[in-house]
Image (cartoon, one colour):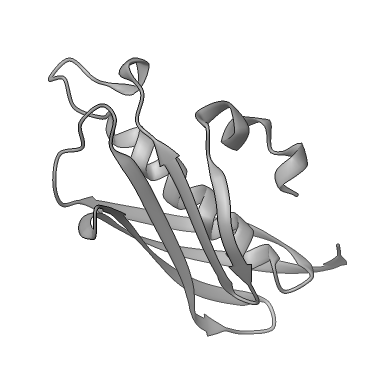
Length: 124
């Protein structure tokens, strides 16, 4: 799935760990990712967390797509920051599953993301 995820690769996201219902990703914040305040655009942490959700929820062997997501931005992120996203399954139903993703920099949480996915019957 990652090999075909051109957006995640374009962002410079790399996968550090994946297990059933779990995923860890990392990426470095680049200058072109900054907003007018000189901090990372909120879409950057959202995209990283959303990718972690996608890989964690699809790690169960069935196609899963997000149906609802939300994010809380806790701290500003600066250029050069190496971000880490950790996605964990909170509840895994047959058709619907819930995940949380924590995005951090140097051990400090910078964003908290929640996502709900729909699992189809189609296998990977």
